Each structure stands twice: as structure tokens, then as C-alpha cells.
Length: 204
Image: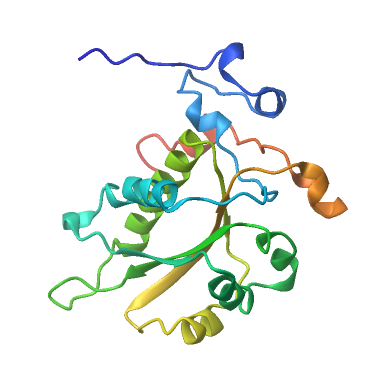
């Protein structure tokens, strides 16, 4: 099977990404074109689409294949209102328009009851897989750390062995103008520090 490697060039990037992001090396355009927006259309995300996105997360790599991640899914108004009860007010302003909200958890223990040192790392791999698959299907995602974890655990009846990570807003990207003015100014793809700043050769 021949795999075509699509690398970054001007034609691959959306105009807003082209204006705000530049790769140091020729990675696939997927990695630049995916960005975390706050504006969402009032458009239903079908179960087929949602479960396709979660299926991608299912296939994320994990230590000893333990797959510690879990996803609490909110699609109905009643379910989403439960989420809004623990999301912080500033984030409620835009998450209330997302058609789907997810809470990513991970089991802190291995099957033998010993603590897992990789559960959070593995949950991060699942989140990345989810985000990229959503983008491939034309949807947007944004991870939200601004929520009350203790209240979320209580409201959603989450057992103690699970660590709570991020709330994920999921839906079709909407118009920037639908956001509050402060958010409109920030509704752009952000950049990254240079690759060289993240690499430590040999040792610190």
C-alpha cells in the first residue's frame, strides 16, 4: 500500500492558520489546521459522528494496553445542564452552545490494584486522537480546565479511583461574531514556540 505524505504548503492551510502558524518542519497539514475554537454552530452532532470520534480515541496507545480513559458524554439538555453546574462561569458563556460536552477521566490503578504511573499520559493520547479525528470530520474541539472537579465528581457520581482531567466541548465551528467581544479577539489559531526550545539534547 502506498501512503501519500501530505506536507505543509500554502494550499494545504486555511487562511486563518496560514496567517498565524508556521511549521519549522514539513509536518502534515492536519497538525496545523486543527485548533481549539470556542464558537460552535447550533447543529446536531449525530451519534454516528460522535462515536466515530470516540472510536479514534479507543485506538490510542496506552501502557500495557490498559486503556485507562473513560468519557462521560453529555448530549441532552439535561445532561449538559449538569455539566454547566460545575463549569466555571467564564467558560459557561461559550460551552453552553456546544452540542456535545465530554469529561475525560482515567483509572488511576492497574488491574492488580497497583497505582498506574501512566494513566494521565495515556488519557492525553486519547484526547489527541479524539481531537484530530473530530477535525478530520469537520468538527472543532476545545479542552476546558476551568471547572470545579470536586463538584463534577459529586454531580456525575464518579468513583474515587478515577482522576478527572478536562471537559471537552465538541461541535461544528461557528462564527466568531457569536462570541462575547473578549472571546472574539482570541478566536484565532495560536502559535507554538520553536521546536528547538522543546528539545534537550542528551541531558539538561
